[in-house]
Image (tube, rainbow, N blue to C red):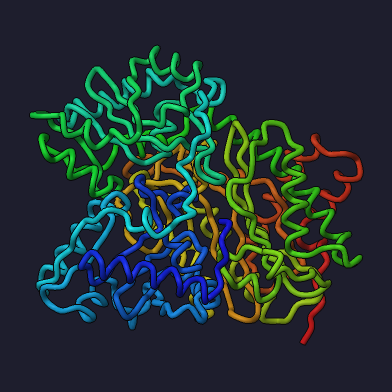
Amino acid sequence: MNHPNTPDSVRVRLQALRDWLDKTGTDAFVVPSTDPHLSEYVAPHWQSREWLSGFTGSAGTLVVTRHDAGLWTDSRYFLQAEQQLQGSGIRLYREMLPETPSIAQYLCGSLKAGQTVGIDGTVFATTAARSLNDALAARGIVLRCTPDPLDTIWTTRPPMPQAPAQVYPLQYAGEPCADKLARVRHELNTLGADGLLLSALDEIAWLLNLRGSDVHCNPVVVSYLYVGREDAHLFIEPGKLTPDVAAYLAANAITAHPYAEAESWLRTLHGCCVLAEPGKTNYALSTALASGCRVLEAASPVALLKAVRNATEVAGLRQAMRRDGVALVRFLMWLEQAVPAGLATEVRAADELHRLRAAQPLFVGDSFDTITGYGPHGAIVHYEATPETDVPLRPQGLLLVDSGAQYLDGTTDVTRTIALGPLTDEEATDYTLVLKGHIALAQAVFPEGTRGAQLDVLARMPLWRGRMNFLHGTGHGVGHYLNVHEGPQSIRMNENPVALRAGMLTSNEPGVYKAGSHGVRTESLLLAVPDGEGMFGRYLRFDTVTLCPVDCRPLRRELLTADETAWLDDYHRRVCDELSPLLTADERQWLHQACRPLSEQPTATRRH
């Protein structure tokens, strides 16, 4: 975003919001990080929380009262938020810690009965708005939907995204839009619903086989979609419809309407039953729909249909992983030469990795901003190197590189932690325990119906034994040339009722983060695949589809079991076999060395 985030500028913006509170008779205002589609990553037009607070993480909620302000965020951003909020007058509230009050508890403790909390209903999930309203009402505090105050106080607010939509070719999608719509209508018929309202941008993009560039690193199109039993209506900025896209929509019996007319159009529906997922539909849209329709509140059927890859998507994913692996091998070779020569910094490394990926066929862009965290920066889970924070990479310690790419035939996400030179015993131990957890999850075999929360402990147990933990999830779903973070499946401590199915792609990324010292994370993507019949039904296993060597130099080999060593050696054989035909002779030689059996690998020296 092109705006300064100094403490003084943040204080000026907060005062502008407080002036608005005074004018409208509002006592507090809640600003989430989302857009009207409740996206994790949002276009600049909706980056209101970032503009107000100066905190640039993707997750967080800002609460501003007339005399106080607080920002709630999760463990991925504790260190980053602490640094970016310094001097702003905004207090950091660390979510999931027992001493941290919820936003509702904070507001109930700060306000009196009869006072008012304002929200913009277009950027609040229906479930979140109801929950907050119930908690406040119990104390006599009023929750009120207001016009967005940022329209008034953010005088340089970026415009709505205007990039054109694009038809996603069938050769990559593997299933026509008409067939996907037919499957969704079958689900609606089963549920007894007349229509489906979709707000989630990844679901709309997948269902219609449309892609765009409205959100940084996420190839989605800002829009709403209503699917009826025989018709469909897309709400989208008219300027985004090229002649080809307009003809495509017409051929699939999809009527286009201006984006701003979604609420008013929904109010014209009467007497029908419409499925809308309350956690994915904003409060304003839900209110409009409920004015004349019976709303069936249930999970969107699109999310699960999208999560199970078809054969074309799986084949494309494997091809994308091979090309991504080539870029990663070339990056690791570059790093090996550049660090001792004093030619590498965090920013330079991220730029080089982007350059190498961009040279690959079907590359479109990064799937998220690359994290290159050296030493203490590796402990900041979603660190992003900038010219202000950039540091040289020296031949010692650990470098954490978390990156991914968008290819037309697949989306990648991979983390490797690399020894740049001598390590401490603590760094080597942490690295080894993280890899043990990674291997344990990668080796999992489980019956159909197993949920991610039931497998999460596999990745954590080696760390728990060392009295360590990580507070982020172990695994998230990944889209197909779509968002790098998608559901409905996940692998995390929190319960998620969605069972893992064959064809689902999920990350495997345990980690350890020690503030002021170092961070370790090892991440590959896992494809759930059938593993035959067994007692009480069919079983699944994970196929690690990411193709990138794991650095063996940091390992404390005495902590690995024979089974873990065998898994690592087998993985490296596969990486070598799949990537070697795509590499030059020098690159093949380097890869063969990097993928030798563990017993033949060098060990990083120790430092104190």
